[in-house]
Image (cartoon, rainbow, N blue to C red):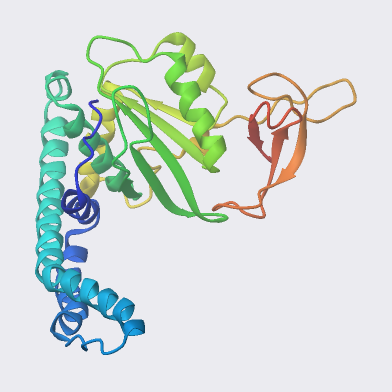
Length: 299
């Protein structure tokens, strides 16, 4: 994926609203005008004493900002809302095309942006709330942040998308996401690619709260999700959260029942999360923390 270009304030505002549901920008537009118009039309009192010049200059700056902002900010928010609606329609179209096309051509012909939008739509169809972070790139980064209700409130999951046609995704990518998950207190993570994963990457993800989704499986998930109308009301979800696939932590048999760290192999200690969505929940943490950030769920 190509790194997103960093634009000015106007582009930042439009992109912000484009990442939100389209109706947020529509509602924000009149609110911006109602908030800024009174400031723009307010008269600035003339300074009659030396000590009043500072206040007059500040009010003049605010009036100037409001005079332009009362029109520009609503315009930018409406443009962002239009971008959001267009992306929503494009995501649905991409998901339909991939679900109906059994070959790999539908995925291979996509740009990195289209692939990211497709993956986000796939998770939306699975019941996740999806936030596009706007920070993805060809050489790493979290592209999507997922959330949905869990046992400890709303659980957060991180997604890294890899639109790699010619190469297999290696273990370094999975390790990178695993480290970000630990740093950000995520309940799990997904690495999604249009291609395949190396055997080493699959071995590393096995037993950890990281789910690997390759191109063929992504197509199957989209097909199953979009064909849900003819399926039974009670069924297993097409895509489970990584925590559902994590095996119980191996236990040492030499009298110490603490599990071993999945990263460095050392013993682990019981810890309690102090922040994030899992605040107050107990988990196993590596005894070598912060040198090693390996974790396991209490099970």
